[in-house]
Length: 555
Image 1 (tube, one colour):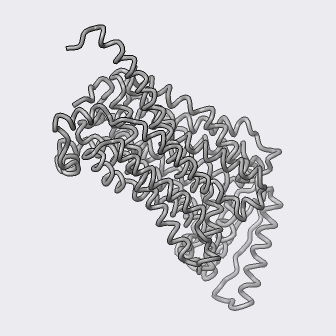
Image 2 (cartoon, one colour):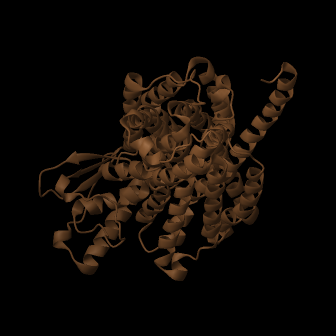
Image 3 (tube, rainbow, N blue to C red):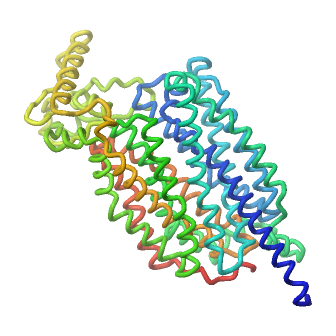
């Protein structure tokens, strides 16, 4: 047994190691999120470069779908790398995941466009996104487990909350690089080729991050298990083949992580896409406003991690989900008022309605880019509205009714495609859309947001509130997941619910929400998706999720 005199230097050394562990794990994970989020930030440019064979709306939804593809495979990455992490160790596993992520990102910057190599371009792009998703599926669980296994029992929430800041810091870093590149080379050059630079420079970050992580030792908890011969021989079957552990995987997913995932992606990604695509705020301004809100809110990740060490993980996460569900609709409506007041005023003074029979209306999304939406009068009526992001209400009409659009007190009856063909139909549709555009303009509907009329402090305040909700649900989640599962299958067990909750429930949110908006015409309708999931998490979490903050994780 060590004497008192021997224990003091060890404690000092451990403190130094803990700081290195947090810094190295966090910096590496920031880099991975930087890579992953670059794609989301540049989705509009990527849709032009790689999906130019389809119409604009479809191309953007395709770009979001390719963004989501990286999320789709994250649970599989969690299984593959979680198993490796529980078999051979935490450190080497997340060195591999980092290398895969960095090289895939670098390759996106060099990938020829659709115009150069045709359909091969989007196929290769999606392939690179899948590799990124697999890598990220293995990264987060490794970093969170590694830090938690170095942390004192009473500071686990605080220590792991630094890992929780990395997603936001990665997004923030990506925003800064994108904004900086745009500013230096100009918007035209950025649109043509400059969007590639943030991907290409990531190779430098990869080298620095790999070097830093090479300095780390293996987790003490894993090393102890390995020395004692207690590591798992079959992590997957132990984690998911036994109901005693599998039930906690399910409860963690539905009672904590699903709600956390949708709140996160609503606050940090859907808000950005909503500003750009629905409120028509230019990309540079939207990026700057989001970056400011992230900078203001990021310290609250650490605050809520620290607070969860005092009062528990469960009440903070569930209250954040409940608050999000209760306030999303008024928050996004206030965002419309602040970011594009002309649009908000026009929606009130001259609301748009579409009167048609439901069977006459198609879903305004074309997966192959060949549908001109001109075979039915309702499709003709809605096409221009969908393309312009106009909020409208549907009014059911009897079968056989020719669809019409009402803007304020003016009504525009769509051409009847049954009575027209060829050039006559094209001319009728063009005239109809020109009349509709003129009426919308006269009613005050703007072609884009006027930044001089925008209440920027209020927009930043709203975006800060949305990210503040993210910090509540996300700050304590790593500590909660680490504490739920035994050490020998921890990496595998915690990674799967985390990446299903964030990769599927959260990652598919922008695509799903915009599809819901396209289907209904209501620009706020997509918010029902995160609200329903968050409410479900609150109910299941209250009933089944245990409090874990006083548990020891050494076993």
